[in-house]
Length: 196
Image: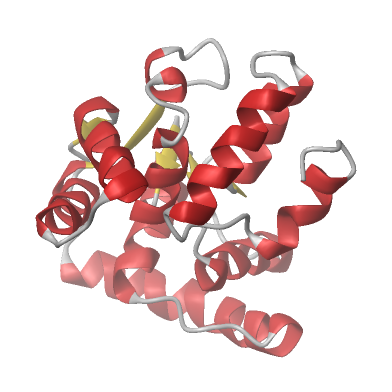
């Protein structure tokens, strides 16, 4: 399963309407942690948002799969944190100048590692933390765990012919209006395909 870690990623998928949420044959099953992912989206929906952003948040809330995972005890999370995150955070800070993913982000990473999910994020500190966690190779994660962005999955769908150029260009405009622009490290993927 693709585990969506943040509201930004949910909103980006929602700019395509229900396409990615309802047609799992395109990229696979999308979902988020019900207790945290749903709460974040719900809180965002209560804010004074309008236009494209409002449409995307409403679409995500009505379409995304919210799953209940086993809650980790404080000890389990602390133990994992102490053993794995510290080295990866130091490496991410050294390599990219970004470290210090928040506790909520780490929780999603912990879920993905534990259950063998593919973590989908548009939060750069979390993205780099997960990359370094994999690169260091000391983490005993379940088979299937990896890290991707929404952009990676959109490009995969485009390359497979599931969405066309016009649709991607239209969605990029929505992302920009909703202040959810293309993740800077993935921009070349779009440029080399004539999508920007």
